[in-house]
Image 1 (cartoon, helix red, strand yellow):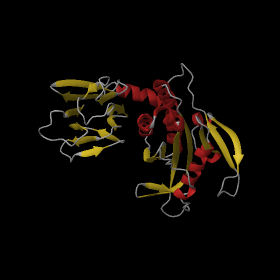
Image 2 (cartoon, rainbow, N blue to C red):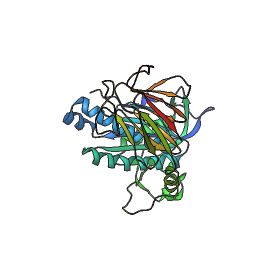
Image 3 (cartoon, rainbow, N blue to C red):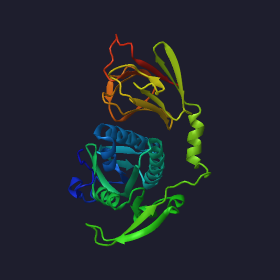
Image 4 (spheres, one colour):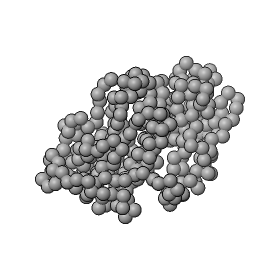
Length: 314
């Protein structure tokens, strides 16, 4: 197993001073803990498949909270948000989702998260700067199941989120002249707690979302109230595909915000054609589905292919 990491070396994200071109953003490092034991218990192939599923689940939460995944290395994700409130609500949702995922998988998986709001530079799909370096250090300080940030980031949060914060330490961090206030963000939701206003609005909108899939002469309706719609070779999927090119759990479709999103976690990828646009292959990533188009599982589409999935978003 390769020991890849986004945060093993500070030199991976050299400090870039706050100069012209730097923008204020919230940056997050999210690291799945307990993977070494998982590889030992399951072996490389099964462990990697489970970790990939967990990362896809985490990516869904990032997307839902208007963030973007800059890159993923091993079991760690680097994410970017427009401001700290979105980053913190995403981190809370990710911890809650990971807790449920671990129960469903029957495995001791947890997540540590470090996030920070500050100036950074975006360049060719990557991000650099002091905020990135500091967030990388914070995730190393976090214990499994923790969300760690600093006092300055907390000061920019809305009041409901600030009430979740508690100072746990003051540390002199490398590269900083003064001590940094280390703050933990609580994320566990008590049973019976109401949805937030934003969650309620999303739930209302989800009831009107609708996608129609056509496959093998049948028409399948996927609506926004469904948690997810799975596609793959295994018969347990909502849409089983009997193709050697399909993975057992190949892809899933979920409603996010006001769109349906395809998440691929397969070996051979999913080929997507939107309306009259050129075909695209996605693999271990997500893609918005809109209008109408065609999905080809595990291989490029061809006119003779009877295994194409037509879709229409309404």
